[in-house]
Amino acid sequence: MKKFEIPSFYRSTIISKIKQYRNLKDPRKKDLSPIALDFGSVRFFIPRHFGFCYGVENAIEISYKTIENNPDKRIFLLSEMIHNPGVNADLQNRGIKFLMDTAGNILMDWHELKKDDIVIIPAFGTTLEIQQKLDEIGINPYKYNTTCPFVEKVWNRSSQLGQEDFTIVIHGTHYHEETRATFSHSKTHGPSLIVRNIEETKFLAEVILGEKSREDFYSFFDGKYSDGFDPVRDLEKIGVVNQTTMLATETQEISDLLKTVLIKKYGMQNLSLHFADIRDTLCYATYDNQEATYGLLESPADFAIVVGGYNSSNTSHIVELCEEKLQTYFISSAEKIISKNSIKHFDLHSHKEILTENFIPVKEKVNILLTSGASCPDSVVDQVLNRIHSFFNGGIKVEEVLNNLLMAK
Image (cartoon, rainbow, N blue to C red; front, side):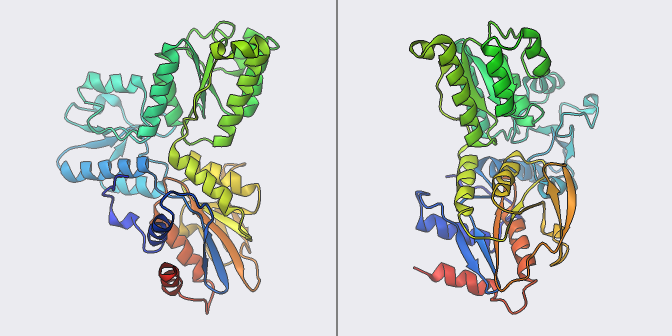
């Protein structure tokens, strides 16, 4: 695996050492059990996989090198580099300006761009329409392209499906930057449709079986299908790809449901003519992080803390997994932990930050699951751990626990 040059302030003194230890002990990534850091009165369980992934580190390296190597040029990002508020704020503080927000709303008039300006493509990739705009201005959209290779893998898979006359069904959130980019690429190769979850897929199944009308389809999937899409004609042959940060289990559930529906309609003997049984296009880091979360949840704990950007898809799915088992606090930084009694955290259901009092129970030993999303720096997880550790007077020092772990055989 390539080693990236990212700013030292994103590295950590605690989490990075734990990851190095785990990689040495388990290079094949077979052991998904968490590491326990026992400080006496508080114990943290740290998962096998979490934090910065290949695509994120690649994007950060390119962005900071671009700033360093072009001090006299105007530098722009199409939108957020990754879904982490701290990283994006630091880039803005260094002079980078955003052309759009994450929903695609314009923040700056494109006519203000000049051919000598630099525009960085974020890790999510971008649409063919935006690439064309940049070309027309005279800006090479590929020179500072940080698109994650696993996103490009999905685009390639979509192209293959289209060339074989399959309709491309994208499991993703239609307003997410990555899904907008994937949809833009896939619709040039074949009819394309976005489904958000298993509930939308069940509706699609009824359309395929003729239980819902063409008009029902157009109304329900408004804004989520390619131009000229005909639900009668274009749902005879289907292949499923996904936004790389979705839940792997849900992508599989969606694929299995559509496969079952096509068997019911066309017969098992004709399945290969109507369903492209491709492997999941979820990226390895998303898959590893989700699997490690399942392993983490086997630990006895009072609550979980998940750190990451509130608009981060992969982080939100980790929160969802944790919420199924125990109280979970989704925070963007250590600053959200106001005191031992108060925490400000994001509620996925109301899409708002809420304040919870007395979140740390009063007991002899408090057990906490601590993890983060793929766009969260390890240094931020360090800060969260240190913040909570400081509330427990008389606890074992972090350095001592860490040294004991690293010295263990």
